Length: 212
Image 1 (tube, rainbow, N blue to C red):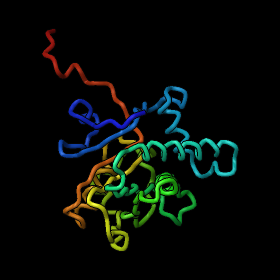
Image 2 (tube, rainbow, N blue to C red):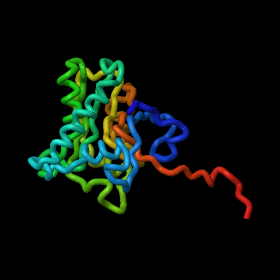
Image 3 (spheres, helix red, strand yellow):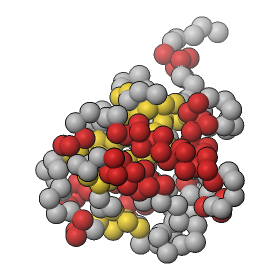
């Protein structure tokens, strides 16, 4: 798995991304397929195991996935000029279903690299249903309305902010995070880094004039 940029060939597969969104991913995740479909699917399925699995033998797979993702993040060059900001999970910290897997990754990165910087710049007011659990997914504006910017976490930030999330699908959470951060830190460069992007079949027929 190597860091790859979302370009003009793939940007259209992520509804909310526009040309000035600089986003990167390590692997391609195929939705509605099991963990055995690909190495990336296996990693994402293990990484997203619910906290209800804690204490069971399968929890070791989640812990291993967290360590593997941390190694991927640490493979990025020049992290000394970056501040990573995790996207809040759907549940607030006081919720029994809270899963801090993204923060766990960044803490693991920091343990092996003392110069690694991350901040929980954005939190949520209330817990929300997971995006994949509902038929009507919220828009970036709706998501941003539930976000709180933590000014206490914003001191001595580096000039380049990395919004970090596990899977890029439509890009709604990335855009909500970018909007929220930009309102308070207009002079910072903002990019996105994802463990994986959801791959979609190309709509190649739209590119041709077909005769009946």
